[in-house]
Amino acid sequence: MGPGPGLGRGLLAAAGLLLALQALQASPPPDGMSVLLIIADDLRPALGSYGDKLVKSPNIDQLASHSVVFQNAFAQQAVCAPSRVSFLTGRRPDTTRLYDFNSYWRTHAGNYSTLPQYFQENGYITLSVGKVFHPGISSNHSDDYPYSWTIPAFHPSSEKYENIKVCKGEDGSLHANLICPVDVSEMPEETLPDIQSTEEALRLLDIVKEHGRKFFLAVGYHKPHIPFRYPKEFLKLYPLENVTLAPDPDVPKELPSVAYNPWADIRHREDVAALNISFPYGPIPEDFQRQIRQSYFASVSYLDMLVGKLLNGLDDEGLSHNTIVVFTADHGWSLGEHGEWAKYSNYDIATRVPLMFYVPGVTAPTPRPGEEVFPFIDPFAQVSSPAPQGRPGETVELVSLFATLVELAGLPVPPPCPQPSFRVPLCVEGQSVARYFPPGRAGGADPPIALSQYPRPGDTPGWNSDLPALQDIRVMGYSIRTADYRCTVWFGFDPNNFTVHLQDVHGGELYFTESDPNQDHNMFNNNTLSGPLVRKLCKILER
Image (cartoon, helix red, strand yellow):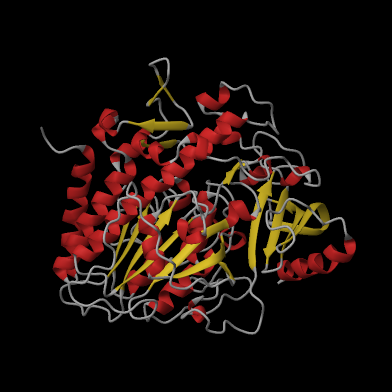
């Protein structure tokens, strides 16, 4: 039998990389450290290192124990393509002008440099494995190659089966379900996308180590994105009787209708559609809610196993002593909180992400030759998670990733963007968070804030409320998050000229962190409290 499609793609990628390495032989390698950027999809901070007592994530927690771990990091928009383009260009969605999946920033907004492009221009080999950019129009059907990557991005051959009927139901037939634990040996190609991506990343690490070149390797994992298709043995980690419901499963009475996410994408899955749930508010039956949460957590542990194998491979190649490792996600995911599922909102549960940086010699001692930093930990073994090295509580933004990684690698940090910056190819709108390294170091005089946003087609939940196309957007919810509060205002928006109408308010939300950490009690109608914060938000948007 010949090699499978995944292996064939990997061999082609390896051949292309060897040619690129040969072409670089004459040029001196850069002085800074290499970079391994790991991006999970739809991962809220449901990890032991973030205080989750149910989820088993020993390998990511081990990484956290050697890292600076940001407890309050937020994405700029809680949907895949806009968030990824934002943090990979260092620009906010209003600058990339991407709020859906249907445009490519270089032709639609401006010819902005990307994070991997900047490393490539500074002598690094840059490699993409799995879902880094969102595939399709938003990355020019090429993952922004050749601008961002030395060789074409690798996509696992088995990812084409993610949304087709491969889930075996109780009736023995195959379905396109939301909940889809599987026997991997029965899957097409006898594998899963994230398994293939891990194998390819390990193969690439071996090649770059052999040739002694600095690298920027981005590995994007599909999980825990829906459908929850993962090896079925991970269900054993989460007996259903141990899985609780969300602490606040009801839609808050004070929530403006424009803010609600009616989770249309999961309603189209066969197992969810069979429940005949009323639109838009549901609710999902409690027993099925537990099953969704169970499979989400099982998907996280499956992801953790693969991250553990990848990090152990970094050890095996002797690269842990001079490689920065970053672990993050594109946004969070609601698991029944506020009566919502999926992302598509400005709540913390949808915008908050894990964000941790391992920097040898800074966040942990530089390993001695041959020393293991990341020994693989079996998630099925009973182990206690090591405590994180540092847990800065400052509010930070994912758009800061560009400036932060560049600074940590010792490269010149691009200048802050002017306003507007559509004609400026290289600048950043996120401020480096390296100022918080090591933990306890002063971060600056101004209290940090995070700015997120989400579009809606109208004031009432509809089937396209979760992901409206640009031409259908009529309202934009802008949200500022500080250590003390989250304030969101839903303003009128004109997609024809990207204008925000600050006098046209369609609704608002105000939650105070200390008294209402789950954001269940909207205080926006208290003008004494909300008035000054709305004016602050308007000033930010007027810049």
